[in-house]
Length: 85
Image 1 (spheres, rainbow, N blue to C red):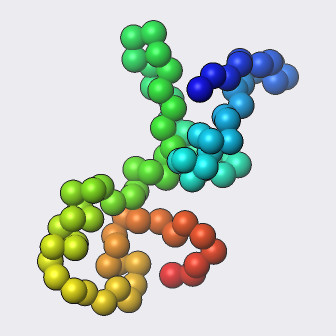
Image 2: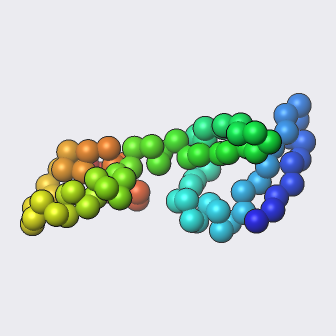
């Protein structure tokens, strides 16, 4: 995918394509971390640091049936919709 750097006031900014926003479940106002690797800019959603890794999820599944009653059962995972914990 491609995007263009644009001037916004005294700053520069980029617009994220809709496909990127949907794929990463981003919303307006979310924070991104910025890393510079060699000659590349890497943007990472901050909320994804709190999600379960595949390995953690497999451990939960392999531990057998479990009723999920509270947010603590999925420690580190944030709500994705309008649900209330």
